[in-house]
Image (cartoon, rainbow, N blue to C red; front, side):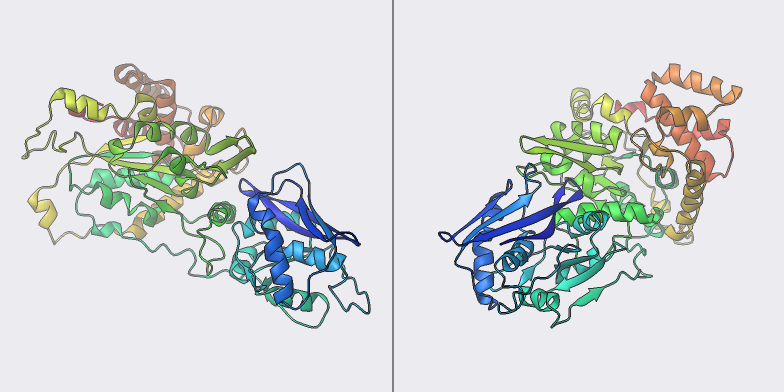
Length: 521
């Protein structure tokens, strides 16, 4: 007898519906799975067999063939186990009472989950992506492992049932049991940012202003200065001033974390912007994604958030150069012989570095022990094209004793800075509400503007044009550097709630793109 159940697979961060066809015939007993399965799916035969026996269903002594359709797409992972079991029980007439030959209508259902040998249903990666694909395919119910129920419940328009074991599912399908139904209820504390506060940072007003501008426009930021000046301290506090994510951004970020297997079971939707800070010994695939079975890298895990690279020149040059295309495109495409996947990576890059290997070049009291050749070699680890993609390049000088020890001055808290950032982002959202990028993506901040948006929204007055011309010629700017200064000036104008870019906004933007020549950049 032939039966069909439905499951879902993953390609990139998107899911696709998989039809699990099972045919049972009275021939020599065998069990085969076809439809381009990977090793994990091929091993499902033993998991399903054992789960059947230990759940009390018995295993049919028949020729069993399971096909995963569409058969021309590679299937990976163990999320098909539950659907294979249900389809097998239906085909062998074991889903209901054998005497009644009861058949259950499975056309509106989707089954997700890995089976243990005992019949328990274990969590899988990418449940949110699969739930979205099931809804888009018109399914009305989806059965997911208990630990994946929260994230799957975010998808509206489909009933989500939490499953602990195979016996529960079968009893529910034949009408003699109940399953827990999950409905997404937003948590008022989901959007709270639990991270250090800018009130802890003494002095460094210029660097904090640069961080505020970067957060308001989603601009990339480079902090350069001697050790102990507060570069890392400032960078780690940037999430506290970033605006809240939209629902679309939250869904996209949650999908990336879900397929990576790092989404906590008690989290339904990521509402705080991610902050990733990998060590400088990381490899290129760890940064941009890859592997035999492609997985998202740090740039994608930082999607809609911050990627912080401390001790920037200490990263391998092959690693830092791999950032160039993701910074420009906002997505990473990984190609393998088995197919191609695309991961989003629209992130804010924040880097911190010393001016030389010893760290004290240009320091007022510590003498630098590096020669000019050593300094050029150290700084040269950062290529010109990569540096050109960093909008803000700011010097963080060492603090005087009075600045550090002064207790009479209260530093501005993150909450106040965030209010200004939110106002600037709201202005930008209103400006771009009818605009899209070339690939159809929504524009959330000024850093995402493309050339046609810059021509439309960053028009300069005569005074600004003359200032821009002098800066372009004297600083030797590239066309990309020119556009990035205009984006930066637009953000500064938004923070000032000004309709047009004024000379003072443009002048500040130009200052944020240059560094002291002692650093050799």
